[in-house]
Image (cartoon, helix red, strand yellow):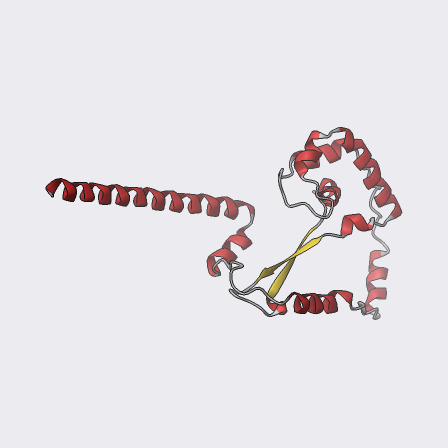
Amino acid sequence: MQKLTERIDDLKQRIAAWGKRIRRYTERSTRFNQNRLFQSDQKRLYKSLERPIVSGTGPAPNQADMVAFWRSLWSEPVNHNEGPWTEVVASQCASITPMDPVIITPDDVAEAVRRAPNWKSPGLDGLHHYWLKGFTVCHSVLARQFQEALNQKSLPSLFTTGITHLVPKDQGATDPSKYRPITCLPTVAARLIKPKRE
């Protein structure tokens, strides 16, 4: 009986030790992630500290209600205010020297792709950055296509159409207005913007 009691005590101590190790690891991991987030995006760090993380558990919202709500927002024609202020701004900008033409080279595309995260969520094209990094032959074709898009001053719909995920703002939200739309554009479109944005 004494050996059984000793064995139980031994196992309890081991469990407590493992629990401490797991807690230490979790705390260290959280600290590390918060420090990294502080260096890259302080605003997001402070928001995550103020507000608890919301998970998507709970009753799913009605799909028809979601589609109707978001379609009503996205399908409405936009009425821009073309007031007299636009003429004032245009006259103020008339004296500004136009920007030199932007030339996108295959090296620009290669550099932008090199720094991109490999497995970032792709858009409709389903193409991850990993594959763009490996297929260097595509860089010259992409550079040419990006340059054509700049010269024509319009983007193909492929670059501006993405997959939208609706993320709940609150725990257990079923109201469609309580969801935040996050759109994943095609990775190729993101690469178009990246080379000359910096």
